[in-house]
Amino acid sequence: MGNASEATGVMARATRLNPDFPLWYRFPLGASAFLMGDYEGAVAELSKIHAVDWRDYAGLWLASALGHLGKIDEAEKVWRTVGGSGTTFALHLIGVQRVMPLRDEHHMEAFLEGMRLARMPEFPQSVN
Image (cartoon, rainbow, N blue to C red; front, side, top):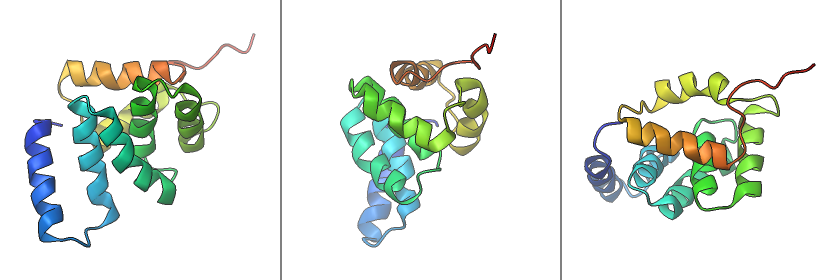
C-alpha cells in the first residue's frame, strides 16, 4: 500500500458518493487506518468484514490491530479462525502481500509486530 492518508481520502470520497458501498470498501479503509496507527479505526472497519467473511485476509489485519491494542486473546482467536491452529507468518504473508501490498518496511514491521503480539508463530513449530 502506498500513501495511507491519500487512500483514506479516496475511500472517504467513494463512501460519500456511494452511501450503500460494498463490504470490500472496508478493507482499504481499515488497512489505511492501521497504517496511520489508528488501530481502533482499523478494528472498527475490519471487524465488519470478519463478521461476514471470517476466512478473509482482512481478519489477519484485524488480528494485528487487536494485538497492538493489547487485546491478545481476541487477536489470537481471530487469526486462528482465519488460518487454523497451524497457521504462521510464513504461510500467510504472501497472501496478505497479494491482497494489500506493504511496500514500506515500517508498515510491514507494524503489521508483523501486531501478529507477534497476537501470538501468531512466525514459523511452524517443531513436532519432536
